Amino acid sequence: MVDLDREEHELLARIARRWYYDRRTQGEIAVEFGLSRPKVQRLLDRARTTGVVEVHIEMPMGLDLDLEQQFVDVFGLKAALVSPSVSDPDEQRSLVARRAAGHLEQLLVDSSVVAISHGRDIGAVPRHFRPSNDIDCLFASAMGGSPKVDAPTNPNEICRSLAERCSGRAESLYAPAYVESEEVRDQLLAQDAVAHALKVAAGADVGLVGVGGTDDNCTMVRSGCLTRGEVRTLRKQGAVGDVLGNYVDIDGEHIVAPHSGRLIGLSIDDLRSIPTVVAVVSGQEKPRAILGVLRAGIVDVLIVDEANAHQVLDLVQKGGD
Image (cartoon, rainbow, N blue to C red; front, top):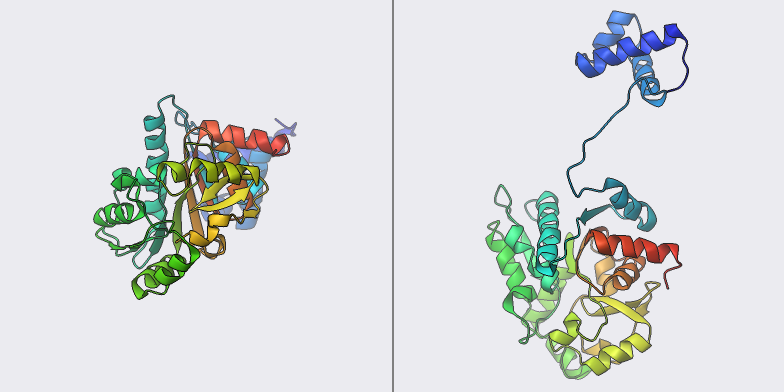
């Protein structure tokens, strides 16, 4: 504590007692001590800065606010939520999804439009999404699906599940994530149903997206959208991860791959135009992907497990290579 003369120390202690213990208003304290309200506020501030008043917050197990704030400061995010790490991948995904569901509940109001991506992390969110009141909002698929992927991880199914839990609505995108050629893609985008669905997603207020890696067993390979050979080619080009099939390198630069013209989904520019994009990430092989996506300026809110969070910040300290 800062050394204070007895008179000042006594005044600060008396005013702090009235404010913190007796629950007096600043106006009441001002009258009692013959001071102005601004003077009372300055004295309360001084009581904290000099150590006369010390604030202690008892954190629940697994909550690391300093770690979350580092992400906000380093990447300019609106918020970051970090879940404690556990060894079981399914339990880890569930913990992250629970945080994501809670945050989504806070964001949504009537008339909100939410663009939804694919993947296991996003697919786990509906199980924990339980708003206290019905919300007249719309969940829109931001990317085509794949018949090789289980229903809970396809965007259309995720949209329907979320909508059911808040009496909202779902806008489905009836198209595959990747098609055979750019010509086929252009033909599909010319159809009103496909074009309308993508337009709705592009105009969303909130985006809920996963972050994919570029390992041989990444989501895009498991879903049959890309072959292992195509993913390996992406890695040679410097790709570290993707959002909605849009690949970036470690510096956040977009990787334009040969198959990019076959993608049916929102682009990186579309995502940047959405006011609040929430990325939900768990699992191994993700730190470099997360870092690349954060540097791309796509994400506003990051919800992630603690192990990935620490590894991302380690990469930043080491230069991000």
